[in-house]
Length: 349
Image (cartoon, rainbow, N blue to C red; front, side, top):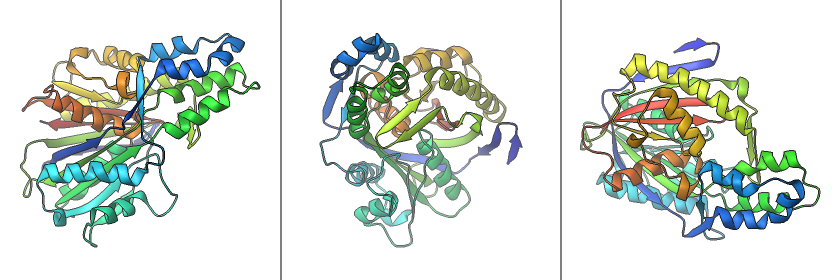
């Protein structure tokens, strides 16, 4: 562990940890950006702000909502069950459940304890929530991976479920009020890109798994000087979009440099990249900065929106289903979360 002016940075090489399986659930209700913009038409006209053009620039065309009353626990549990079934692993081998959901049904107990109970896992199985905004799922993978690498457990599961229905509907309601000013309107627009979904991955030690997808290592870096650029509650998310993009790209550049040193990355060494699904501008800038080929990625933000920490594993699962990731690929997972934090890892597929 080392420290520099950005804060704490971590680098770790792994030898015995494998991503065994992925399971996911997508919500049934598709909501178009056009439909959301229509609800804001009167405010847009009053403030002379073209909300449609702003959302169009993000590349988010639609997102999904769960049915009213759907809970984080039930949707997360369904995804977790699918991942466990796909792994063909004895559930008694699972030594840890980590939930990384930003959304929660309750402040306590932990969502992980409720998911643990729904899955009927053994009492010795550790369960906890781990939160770090949009970076939480990758942090969850590194936490469980390190437990496996150091011999504490043989297998673990990371799970996440997000629901954007409440925050999107409350934001539209708030922005439709006559007292809404232009600054508030702009700060809240990024909320309308949020989506919903649930996903889980099972990680194993090579002794108990099929040894197909090895997690080779991970690097992370923090720049908490910019901790106030994105602030969210269950009913509101305020985003300083331009400043967040600039600071996030600078932090990503530093983290990429660490990946180059630890794992030998360069613009041509990676076969496929799965990045956090914020929007088109973020993706374009990131790939241009690293000199990466955009044909070596897959984007889900046009039809899923920004699903927070679930975005990267959901995109990975869908890319695998579509046959875009082949055996032997050097696969990079890259995430940036408000705070700011950045984490990148490599998987040998």
